[in-house]
Image (spheres, rainbow, N blue to C red):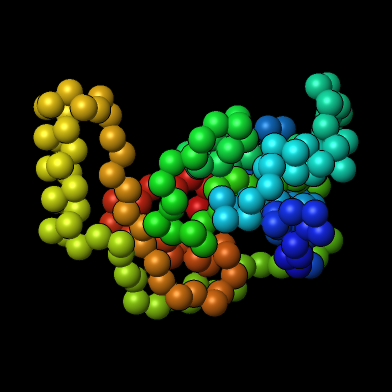
Length: 186
């Protein structure tokens, strides 16, 4: 269930059904117990909100974790990293549905409500943010900028999107089938 925080536009959720995450360092399964997402458009201080999430799960202070206790996985994009550090953010993401920061709190153990993945369901038609010609043009523009000395390195990123209504594990399996895609743990 995703619900807005009353004091800022962040999203925290606790899944109605536990999902198995990749095996933990000791080889045991991890169960997701909470998830927090922040997008640039949410505003507020993502570092403070993240601190609240960590504190709520006993992870707010150095050495606050305990063996066998919860752990957190943090994923942050460029805007998320800048916002967490209190630095200016860059241009808005071309894909605002993707969070700029995600934190998943997990604990070791088998979820009580674990269920097998649904059979694979093909996704809808894939769309991309670039045509082949637009991508080639962007790559050429980057090469010219490097040659002029304007930049040292640039990541040209494109996004793919397709409608999908199956279990997230089935979606991960479908994405792993894309040409050139390499995803661990699928």
